[in-house]
Length: 428
Image 1 (cartoon, rainbow, N blue to C red):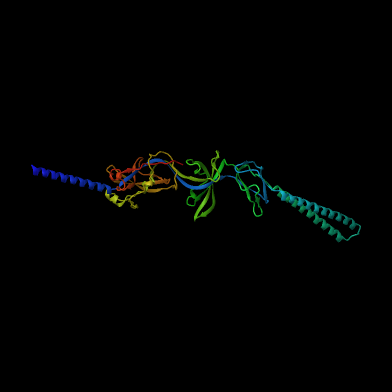
Image 2: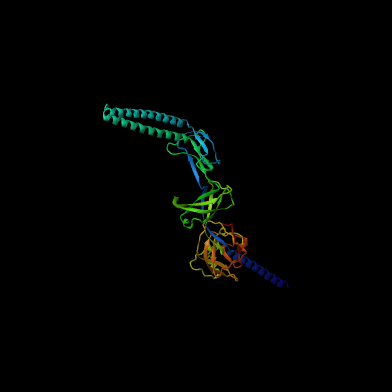
């Protein structure tokens, strides 16, 4: 019996060793096989957007300056003060202007006296000429002298009006109703108006209605038009979206860093006054939308299986496609969610249109190729149509190498692998 027991024990050891070797071989085989990452075909609303940045400002602003030089002797308003049209804002020291008025008045009185004397002389010359006591040339000379004196009077009167006007310029009044958004002078400061009128104040007419001047690149400007709806956000109010309307697309272009931009004027309502002049706005222009359509994450359309994966399943490569061993990066696929008719905010949206390819696994675990027609894209999701495309359909959007994660190492490529879901961030 002893030799028999030894034989049985030896056979058992051989079987155990074979099992261990087979298990190790199977584990190694599974580790070499990548696990597919899946997403689902959803249904929802896609909005193609063009994004730009701009600056908030009042629709009507008036720069208040001065036409005379001098020292600020009175400052009657400050930042954020509400002013009425005709209200006194500041006063420039009027001493020099008052002296100018006095000098101009004295000059006028002097020339008026000279003109009166010339008129009396001419009247006397007419009487003498009638009596034949003076020559005719003397009468003509007296007439010229009188005309010159009258012209000098008119010139002196204009100079007096100018001096009075300069005196009135020393008082700075509000040209419109509004709010003082800038005050560029201080009490006692000297302003010089010799070359150009310096800006003393900037008054915004009505901050309950504002505008955004957004810069849009030449590649997107043809998709922007008057009356187009927009939404925008500001850093000061995170998580809040505000509506607006395109009022004007200006034809004048600007070039910065070899990029041609056009200014788009967006008007908006600001009844609560929370939006302030100078804030930077991130503007999204709604270019095109599609409601209640089938959609997939862009990662699923970008995924292209490698030659090794196609050879494993015996699937021919679709014409015009290039191999991609890993497909789209995981970050390109939004995370969990199940869909729904909610719009999304995105960057670089495109009206799109063309053809694409989706990859799925059938009931037997065989890799299948599905050709689809693509519609508009919002930068994260793309509209798709196809005879074999249905809502809830699982499609491949990438692979995870089995050696990277323990969970993926236990997943067989024919068993489904990992699933990312169908995420839908917030909307337009």
